[in-house]
Length: 228
Ligand SMILES: [Zn+2]
Image (tube, rainbow, N blue to C red; front, top):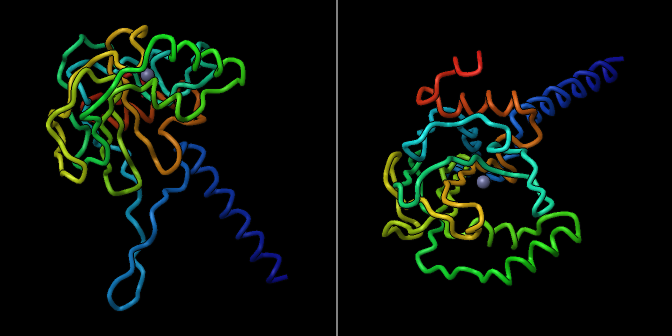
């Protein structure tokens, strides 16, 4: 009997955990526990999902097509980031303090023919392969925030003079808006909040995505937006 109660509790705990994971659209952060000198393990910090600065001097527009989870029919895929409409060359800023883990200081645009062939293949197989998605994101900067969260800044026209391993602070200029990777999309900032092996907003409804994003960018974005 005790064993039955215990396993029921365990089942409920597992279900509660699964719900939290689903609500936050988080994959389990791929961070290993830190081991102290005395051998004790210190769990990694939980992903911080509030207090992000807007990465650009443009508003967060909560139109479904601009948000994570939107369909991208031209490549048989799903949008994994947030699109900010912005003019070419506008400065892009780090959304949080962190460490640069990718900066495309040397970048070669892929040809229109290669792009067309890759997109046609994506349509044929019914999804966008990771390497194609990476080419579509164009010139990028990635910042690791050391809590299982990495922010990605894509389609940049140029990157700041940064090196991998360099620390940046929130608000620091890391690049400029462009249309690299997908010139057909026109200039805009594609911004992703990667959490563990997934992305913020993954698997959520439009309302839920709007909520988690407004919350992520609060107080820059008021939770009063859309009545939250
Ligand atoms: Zn995008």
